[in-house]
Amino acid sequence: MSAILPDAAPTNWVDRHAPAALLPWLKLGRFDRPTGIWLLMLPGWQGIALAAAMVGHTPNLELLGLFFVGATLMRAAGCAYNDIVDRDIDAKVARTARRPIPSGQISVGAAWGFIIACSLVSLAILLSLNLLSVGLGIGSLALVAIYPFMKRVTWWPQAWLGLTFNWGALLGFAAASGGAPFLGWAQIELAAGGRLLPSPQVVGFLALPAWLLYASGVFWTLGYDTIYAVQDLEDDALAGVKSSARRLGKAAPGAVFGFYAVALLFAAGAGRTATLGWPFWPLLATYALSLLIQPRRLKLTEPARALALFKLNARAGLLLFLALTVGFWQGGY
Image (cartoon, rainbow, N blue to C red; front, top):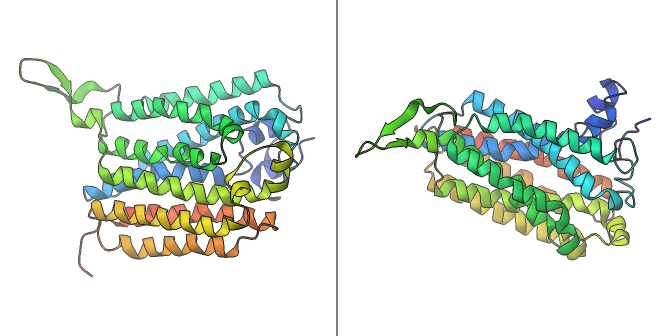
């Protein structure tokens, strides 16, 4: 029997509708907890929206769809990999002890098969993008591979998660800055001397606003994942697991406020350097409000409240995506 996991909503679609045989696999990929899919996907969507707005367009819907599927699958693969690495620790923590691997519902070998299947489909999606996007996608694997071990060596694994989860902002910008597929060499330019060179559309590029958006996302994740870690303060201490929430202790709410403030400054810098239109700014202000109310409500003694605040970030990130999307408009008031 696959029980509803502590940090999954009792009404989640997996526990309500999925066949019993699929339950452990869907829970291995965290499909019963879709907030993580949003938090991995939204930086990519934001990067796509930023690149489009800079040239006066709205985001390409097909590209948004590809990033949704890719983020869903790579998040599933990443969660399975994390559970393989952390299976001994997870068995000691109340919130994670009933996950499929530590509870014995899925073997480590079967979990590796799940990872390979998800990764192959994601690779096919990646290879449909331009050259820079392919390179960035391959480069992200190092961040993903190292992340599960960071909680053993540093008090700030949440910062590494920020570097990892928001890599999609760079990938999305690069993908939207091109538009020609890696395997479609129709847009090859003939350079002087008769040499064949890929056009900028095939290669893709990164600009300063993309890096500022990425930096904003890193601090955003540092904030919301510190909130998430509040759930495990006692169990993490018993298991010897490090986290920003444990390191900060009672200072955590104030620190989260600071992380979010820095994230907002970088987001504003991205909008400013990209010369986005005026509609970007009211929605950015709404995004700011949705972030800054969280540390005011955070209580270290209330894990359920921490989880609820963490989940608010899916909507918050969507607000930033919408702000970047409407930023293409340069018209008057």
